[in-house]
Image (cartoon, rainbow over the protein chains, first blue to last red):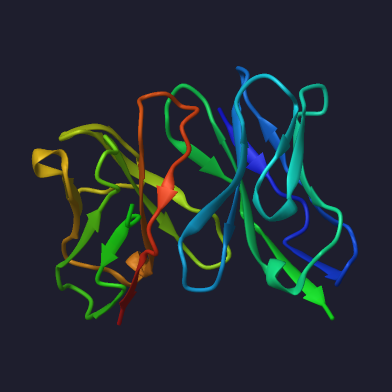
Length: 112
Length: 115
């Protein structure tokens, strides 16, 4: 069975500091991995995804994530936080079943 | 590309009433998904369609829930005899292609409050 664990339901960083949001997954087969962002009262927007190939994936708004099979992780990073990055972030995994399994989310606060 | 749209955005209903939500996917997308999201949780899969065929349903989808996608275009999600536990955000998503690697595009959701 698939599952996604996001460590830290709330993360606070100072503006300009490194953002690190953690995601670990369990999967019996090589997974497809996704990060989504959700702003208040809005739907989810795709930040980036990993399917195959290069394990370091670059997404929108300066975010990137690295797939580490040995650690079953897909952590999301951004070198320098911006106030507009404050939102809820969700990691998701998909196998052949086509449905996405989401983590419980991490709320990012950016302190000016 | 106008994105995925959902109507209504908010719905308040009394316990025991029936409600219906509508989702209009991105026009060329053949897959359509319904999720439920409660406060502090990630979206949970309910069901999905490939064109007009409903291919998978979650155990979360009780007999009071029914979804349709006539003609493979828009979809409706109906909840009969609503209960307070049905209060949640209902999200619709669509994707192009039939593989698990295709990203899903989400609508803004319908927030249901059952009083």
